[in-house]
Length: 360
Image: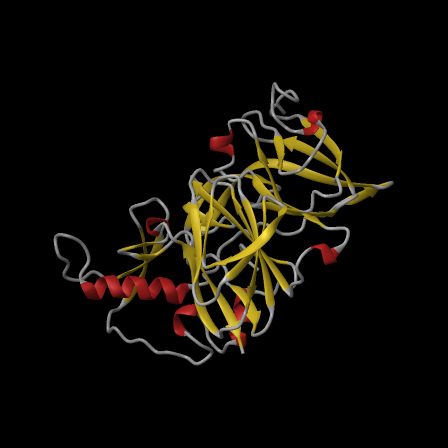
């Protein structure tokens, strides 16, 4: 799924929406179609939201007040953005990273590259990536594995990779001038470490050199450690990873994309979804799911002594949370950061907005 990692189902968003009998989320509050008529013609023009993160279809020129768009123009822009969701864009991050075996060692290759990245339709930015995508490819291993990463730097400046949340030997921690020399342009550096038992859960990998720039430009990815004994963690039917970021890549993004190019989380009624949240940005992002509570059971990979329910989960930079959502309420439910200027403006929804679709 474009911009969204689902281990259970990787069908296209178009196919998933087709199962609901709709062509866009804006056309459905439930599997039944809802028609909205405003009488306002729309163009393919795009506009900034004023916060650096939104490029949504705008209404055709019309009489406008000195203070901004008229009510009809505003409604048309909001409607057009919602009906465009999930909008197609180039680039797909967060897919599984392939590996080769060298004896008992899983060997991965990561190449740090600068590429153009389409955050929303027609809005391309310079991204710093692992293997040409942001988020970088998802690493998924099991407790007890041993892994090796060959990291080649094709960036115009030095870099390094930190394995955030993983318990690794000091020499493999990825902090230049503390545990290793920086990986200079044109060089390759090799990391190797065991995946320790007791270190299961949602973790991350990212740059730790000029990090406020390099990470927010896209040098980040999910590192999932599966438990050796699955019974030690809650059961689920589908899993999704939501990597939050803010900065040069589209202002505010989920899995490297901004609304309407984010992708929905999809489930059938009665299924349990595992949602892994990871904040790679510079700001706090309280993620709010409409319609259903989530049961938070792990923080930073560690099982909580007492899981708790919420509908808004505050995620600080560097934090990871794991939560189960029981898909009990059919329909299309908004799912967004509740710092509202990260998600909506007078031009419509943008940035950290997606939806959960629960099918009958």
